[in-house]
Length: 243
Image 1 (tube, one colour):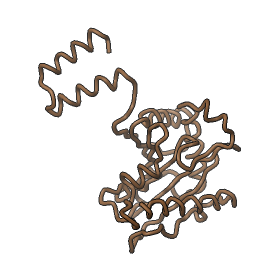
Image 2 (cartoon, rainbow, N blue to C red; image 1 turned 90 degrees about the vertical axis):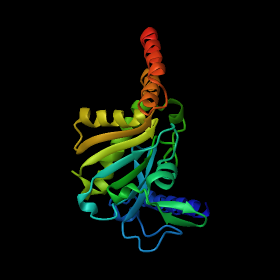
Image 3 (tube, rainbow, N blue to C red; image 1 turned 60 degrees about the horizontal axis):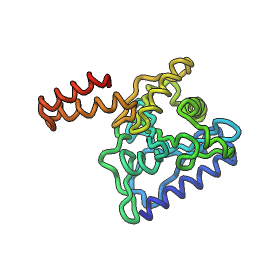
């Protein structure tokens, strides 16, 4: 765990410098190495802040694909909660390039950057290292505001990483990102943003009660966890209660 906290501290310190010096290119955000990082890491890593307005800035961690990053898609990852860190959970706890073990980092055999360039975004402001200088923001933030902020982030991030403009782009997430992901995708389409959106993916998503309730029965039945009879009873309950 010491290595994990050291990594987070290094990323945070580097991004503070980047934020205050107003570096517009991606070079100022590049991470040379993380504490305890395995040897022979060949892919590039970046972290930094992107301001979405004069009061708020969103924090990101970006890892390029292990091989041929110029030909592989860009994938945005959003953790849910709401309030879960995409860096602490998604990047270092699930499918990022490394996992903490004791005082070092080890390679994650299930890392997604084998096949994609992975962009982990801490959203909305207040999650992880993302922040708002206006404290009243935290009392009225909602999903619509989050989608708008995320779109502004993407537009400005692409300004930093211009070599990724036009790249095939996917939005992914889990849990409460069942709200974040489709709403951001819808806003990209409606606003006709110059983003090459190809698809979305959400795992274990929170959508809305009726859909979530019905999906549990469908999942259990399709995986042989409940009988046809029990599944039939669930369908009867659903039809009677109009779920």
